[in-house]
Length: 440
Image (cartoon, rainbow, N blue to C red; front, side, top):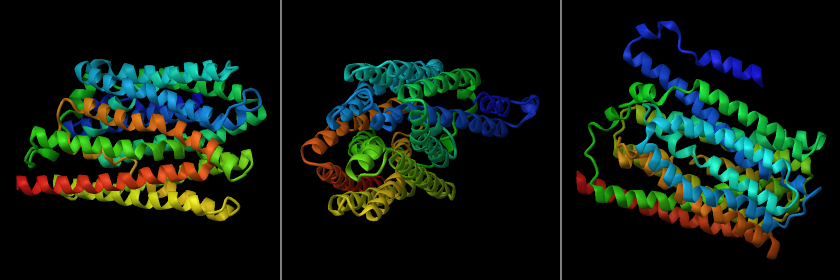
């Protein structure tokens, strides 16, 4: 692990010839460096977020949990995020010099969470650990995504950043499974805690100071917007509210797919623990691949000279397609018999692929709506808080329905929300088209 960070250290160093580079070369180099470290931060964020669900099926050796209690462990950190994300975004806009330190402090905080979890002996102890996790997770998204939204290739970079997080979600069940089987689930938390603390320290040392970051990447989005007629404040508010509602409707599906996949395959579809962990890694890995592909396609659309109206239309159509197919797959999971392992696997893989096609799109649409304003971190914080509010409740409802009515009811719950999300996306497209026609 130390060897990996040594390599990253030297790759991230700015060479002596930096001083004789052109302004555009300096910006490009700074862009790559910021993208690399924000992606590492996103990887750490997702590893911390999905370590608990990866180990839920192994807790039973020491701590017996119902599906509802498992769901609560997924809800608690999200509830913390609801209260903190908007606050962090607001603070990041007012005091940008602290953004870097809030991000790396959150990474180290995830390490502290893992240490607490390793000593847990009851549901109460686990819940306390997840409270610490929620505080630590809240510092990343509003601040890191603001950096990326200032870049010229923000669609591609947002896709790369999203893939790094999804890769963290995918690889965590594999590594956690190996450590838990060989040593135990407590040891798995300790190993991941050491990794998080090292990563946080490396981030603190290598991520550019906020002063140089603002100088070198500031104004990247200005060219993109300079030919566009700005939206009125009322239009911006209406579109932002719709985007927050869409994010809130997508969040339960995202959270439950990521959180409950290992448990679902083990408890509902009767795969072994090892098979469940492996399949979770494959399914979330497919999702990461889909996110990356769509990030590239959206970026090409933007780079071909498409105007803001065309960019927003293409992105919103993409997320409509993504959510529509995902809704269909969720309904299929309700009707396919649990004994049909092949059908379940193909449907779940399809669900992950199509849903994650739209995973990195909403923040880029939001940046088009708000423009290159100084309040972007606040806007992203509100978007993330809205999504988190719905995502915080969903695991508990999913687990409760599984306990009382079976997992088919849980999937029907998600499918209904996905269909509602499709309606909201269509509404956004209609409202945006109306605004475009009014402004033209």
